[in-house]
Length: 372
Image (cartoon, rainbow, N blue to C red; front, side):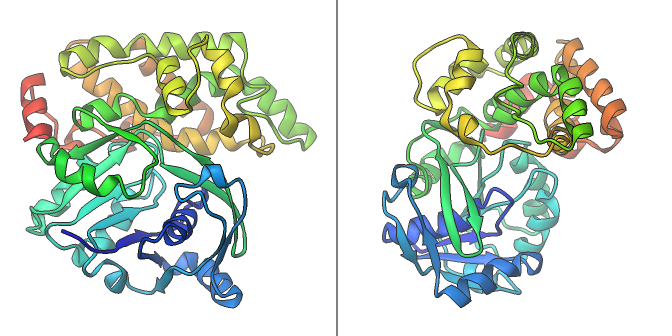
């Protein structure tokens, strides 16, 4: 299927806005749909005659800056989606089902729908909706991290990062070749995962956030009490934060082996995605331009991130591991601790195997389902 690229939504990382502008500058026909609560961007772009993209140009797929004029729609996504070959959703990890439910009536068989978020099992979360709607010809894709991110002031966009060698999965995996052709239109470079199990066991927020968040809570509390902002990946990048990250990471390989998927370490994944030479994890985190150049963040930002990561990343990992006979005690303890600190009920509200369509399955059953 050939056609334009429909970009649906714009999250706080401005993935939708920068992608629409970048693709337009690169010669693609990009249509950006904004939900009613995101209409401020449409108003700003309308007043400015488009979206202005600033340097650094090397953090853009097109490599070009300047005024971009993608078609922008609000209200209903129907016009943006009709005839599109590729539909890209910019959505936060806690909002996947709601946004997809509103998008679903407009999807067409033959389309590839890429959920451009930080893992969180989006394909399996919405696959049942597709089946119920009779749209068996829609291919879902997802990555371990978004392809791009940016800052924004009105209609002016400053790209922050263009990620490379991103691990991306198709659901079902049997359609990986079809998906690859479309995904090449939006990624600088990427690698097809074996399946969505592979991708979700490698989600970057799932791997990187919890160790730093847990070990640095005292630092965050004191900064907040002073009214200061924090350097999550800078000051928060301590020896013990990295030790905790690697200890959590050590619970993945046994689960990955049972599911017949590779399991590169967290440090190997950081090095690959950001094009860095192998180093100890702390040194790598310190060297990542995206982490290094982030402005100081609100002292309680870790709580918002844990509200995404714990119920949508760590809960399904623990339940999956335990269902396969591989307990993950550090991850289970992390969920309980963060629930107590943040005020969540992640075992109740998070992604269960029932919600993912994996309940009661053996490892072989899971593999067969996600691949075929």
